[in-house]
Length: 296
Image (cartoon, rainbow, N blue to C red):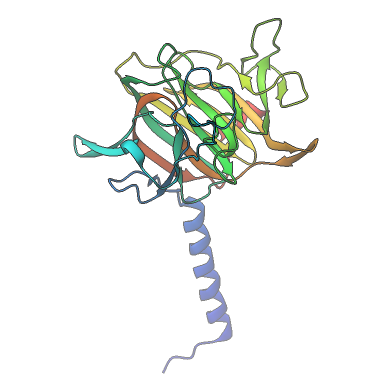
């Protein structure tokens, strides 16, 4: 006959608790694949096929009547399609109509990565301009809140020929960037060793900062882009190089600032054929030391 004492039970419980704690301590967040052939983790929005001379106003028809945007989850002209490359799903964004695919889920503290490559097709109003797209993060609210009437309020990790990792504020978003101050016609330029520079309406530096260095792969090759987001801080990383350090993510409304640290992720359709693959995300419980160093 075995007698189980209170002491033995307590010891067993403590032992199991210790094992569970140790397991939790050593557990590593897993990468989650966000891309499949049916885009099951995404929704979409399409606005307009903008024409040269667009100035931010709602497009009108030949009778001067406002034209309605295409809207949500209507894949007009197959702007978004998934093809297969060596057994791997690849998202093709034609760029013909301005808009986006956006995640169904919201994310806050995470490491996002994807590979991106330019196609060959460009559309009005950018046929004579650089190939252009972008990853929009901390996206909230309805689509169509920006100048192009296509995207949600958000922060942009720009994807553009020669400009991988630039920053744009979408709608009334704002953020601070480690950057050189602008002068004359020169934009602010990101540099990890510089003080934080507010980029927001009313500061005199509205909406844009140039990435610190160009690390884009040659045309026709895949470029690895990574985005680190943690408690309002973010890093733009291109082919393993940190090209921008940002923090204090927020939006401004009626002169007041509000935190913008959580939201959906949008991939833009912006008049250029663009391909995405290896679109992955993992949650971050803490900011890894190698990344935290940029914010000291």
